[in-house]
Amino acid sequence: MPRNSTNYLLGRGALAAAGGYATAALGSAAIGRALPIDRLDATLLATISSFSIFVSIAVIAFAAETFFRAARSIALILLVSLALLASNA
Amino acid sequence: MNLRQSQSLLHTWSGLLTGWILFTVFLAGSLSFWRDEISRWTRPELLPAIELTSALDGALAELNRRAKGARSWTIELPNDRSAGVLIRWQPQGEKGRRPSRRGESNSNAWLDGTGRPAVVRATEGGDFFYRLHFDLHYVPAIWGRWIVGISALLMLTAIVSGVITHKKIFRDFFTFRPGKGQRSWLDGHNAAAVLALPFHFMITYTGLVTLMTLYMPWPAHAVYGSREALFAEQFPKSAEVMRTGVFHSLPHLSALSSEAEQIWGGGRVGSIRIEQPGDTAQEVVMRRRLADRIVDGEQPVRFAGSTGTLLSAPPRESIGVVMRGAMIGLHAGRFADGALRWLYFLSGLAGTGMVASGLVLWTSKRRERFTNGARGSLGVRMVERLNIAFIGGLPLAMTGFLWGNRLIPVGWDDRAELEIAAMFSVWSVALLVGLTAAPRRAWTLLFAATAFSLASLTLADCFLSDVGLWKSIERGDGPMTGMAGGFLVFALLFGFLAAKSGKSVVGLKGGGQSERPLPPAEVGL
Image (tube, rainbow over all chains, first blue to last red; front, side, top):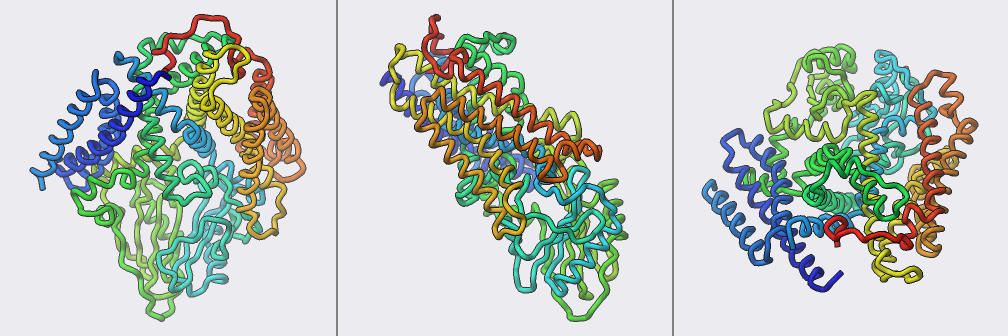
């Protein structure tokens, strides 16, 4: 594998793993708090949804044109999740 | 790098990093669809017939004889596919600890379907493959669950990115070019993946859901403050039953189980637990058979054992609870009968084949870059040898478990653990073969050994147990005939693989194919 592919893979892979898990964790926690249904149902449905969030972020991390753009998109989603989480505290 | 190329990279590397774990998980998981049948095969002393009333009476009598004054008794009834009644008990003062799952401890015993004590060999049976599927082995279960969970998450990623990679996904499915080395592996990989794609997606996602609060505890933390607080609401616990010291006759289980079945609206009792049996404070918990419905949930019903009064009905099943239960139920497939169970099993095997062909494709693609005679880089050779150890070695090792079950003397201490040791010993030998022999020879050797092991096991079992092929046919015992027949079918399959891997056409050897190399987007970089 060419060197630039190795760098690409390691950079995007790390972004997908760390960004994916962080976004899934914060995003699902925010959904759990925001859903206007019984809190047990909200928590379970939010936890179920977390894995979809992870995969979407992983796809974004690899699909974006540059590493910077991928990181920026993921950071934006993270911030929105954080705001949603905080506003329902 | 365009979208398809980037997704191809994601697909290739998430697949490779987790491939060997996923192969193990897929194979053990597929076999677990026959967990009850494997358990029956490994405990040939038990036959499936059951007489519920006499089984319950016998269980109570035996528990009373062996564990009078215990803190709790549990009776596990067979379902339509399993055999024998398992009784377990917990001595006073032993708080909340579930009986050890490793080996047969001295606090459980088997009865036959009519409630008479049975001498049964100690084995983990089908539970071993079931546990291997998500706990792995020889590592703490919690590590195993994390390793399997991370692999499953990457698998889910590999599925989604794999779909994006293959824009011609349906044409791929109808394309098979046998005997063309790497191209045949790609076609096979695509076919196994696309054929059962909805299954692969469902089984991976729902597999994550089975342990979701372990992997993703953050919604529970955000809403409840902790996982424990979530569990307290999700699985409400009753207060510990305290012994009064006043004797009372044992509860009427038949009457209570009919009442529970009425509450469930037609469900059947799977297990019965009596807390502080024989005391006037005794309480009875009836749990439902999981095979009753798709949604996974035992819907426990609690009665006062001495009066028969209903103490607590099953917890409510609202949308989130049902969603989680349905996903877990879809994963485990306990509800599936007949044709549907076969579909589960075959789809699981397709998944196993998808992972295996993907792994082989990775090496075969890279080997073609080297001219004939070159040995390839260290990385490629390592992956190839690990492929041999897992894809060739694990099935052989599993037959070692089955042979261990038949050959280790029934009276030996720790024989359940020895059966497992037999499996891992065979696996170690397979690993050694993979590391030392020439790759092509190693593949052939391991596949041929698996075929021979299964064929000879089927033959030997005609003399070693009552669930061998002839006796099972004579008895009209469908499931056990199916087990023996299944061994033979797999023996043929592995014989075929051994014959094929001996020739270069399947590309296991790699190299030597004079054809246009595939564009990188089609095979990953």
